[in-house]
Amino acid sequence: MLKIDELLELTKSVSTQAGQRLLDGMGQKKKEYVYSSEHPKEIKALADTVLEKDILQALTPQGLPILSEEAGFLLGQQESKYRFIVDPLDGTFNFVKGLGPCAISIALWQDQKPIFGVIYSLMEQQLFWGGVDIGAYCNGQEIRVSDTSKKAEASICTGFPVRFESENDIVMQSFYKKVRQYAKVRMLGSAAVSLVNIAKGAADVYSEQNIMVWDVAAGLAIVEGAGGSVQFKPGTIEHSLDVYASNRHLSESD
Image 1: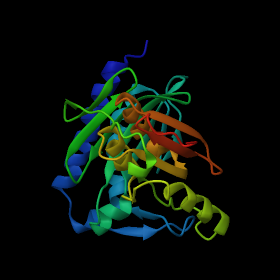
Image 2 (image 1 turned 120 degrees about the vertical axis):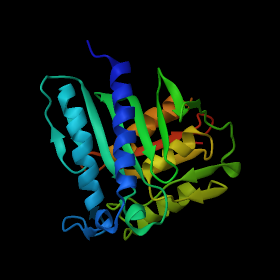
Image 3 (image 1 turned 90 degrees about the vertical axis):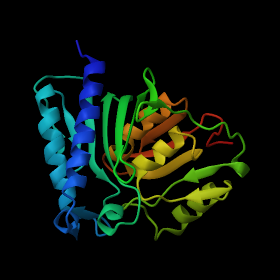
């Protein structure tokens, strides 16, 4: 029988240790990057590879399947409905440029259901974790979503994923129609950090289309643990999702 509590503690330890190793040895070499030949707006940094190696080395012995941004889908040693979903460095561009938030994001899902998520925010050196049956915490302190109930007084975190069709006028008009309902719009450059801001009540809504599942898998679990609501459906790209996560008082359809 799968021991969720033990896996959560392992994941918290793995995330923290990987983050600390990166920060302790953060030289310019780890910030080296190249633009992806497959997706011209996407960059790959040496830090992604370094972190993923450390994380997979720790998680693979658990025998569960793993979906990771860089390595893809790795079969486990056993058939299971559970799988780890890993983004070794969410907000890579922020990291290499020193622009802002970036994080290590690891989740455990059962089929299409988030079980728990762990996010280590590198800038603040804060560890977030949570899930619907766990609650939500930052460095051991419980966190909760906001109680904002009007979009005209709410803030939304969003962004343009690298595969976002920004050249499509219809897509852009739809995006504008959505965000203009809110008092404030923020683009942090990290879906994981955006979602923990929903979970701790600093912002009220997160929404993106065609965002990759590894970018949001942990954050969605943490938002649920903090009392928020999450809605997601498959995007138009493999492993992508259309996501709306909120403090539960705000609905996408309102």
